[in-house]
Length: 315
Image (cartoon, rainbow, N blue to C red; front, top):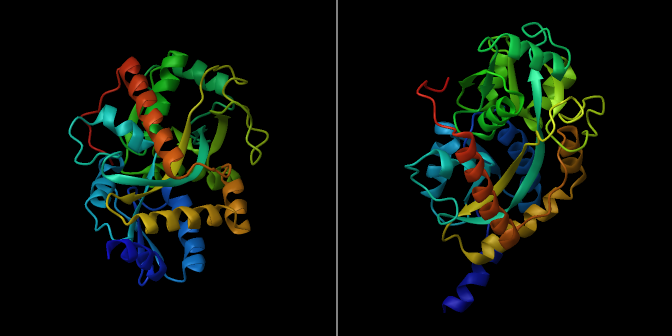
């Protein structure tokens, strides 16, 4: 009987709304990719796909919530690079990314970009920024999506490579950090291009360099960090989809197929291009292997950089 029940589950699914848990505030990079994807899946699946923002603890509050969700195929988790970093940063996580979730696939992958508030920071180029930071240790600050996130480690790596002292200001997500950067409450950020692209285009912030081996097509005039005098500074953020452990295998396979289809949709490809993202192809077991390798890579970075969580609470 069990052998015939699984295919029936896949055929009948979905019967009601599907939730995508985004563990950061609205307006951040994860949210910027989750919402267009949800809209595309709406049309493919014939049911509402709803984004639920559950921010806090550097993305770990939402991840823990998703890990505890019913594994009935109606809740999925939209995580990011932050979640492969978390095991090295947080000693008492209440979830295990590899044991509590089933990998679906990468949604998008974008490079980080060094952005500044044009009025608060007078530097027009990356070399000018580095020179100012060296001459004024501790005077500049940068916002992040939270302590231990990719934004935080991108900033710490930059400081290591340039020998500068820039104060870290953690927030509860990239969205709130971007709001304060636009408002001139902080000086700069090492942000994912997904949440910065629109603000760069609109002139609210200025991009000094992309942390990528090549320039981004959406911003051809922005040099790479290597071109701007900081070789080796390459950081990217990926956003991805997981299902809670125990989700029926036929539903997992169906969602993998639907994700692949969604990423080929013209609307998604255009939106991703505007945000500097390529169209990823890693799904299922191959994506799971990538996650394992990323956990090991970032664990090494955290150890070598001696990164620790700040005592200051996130904003």
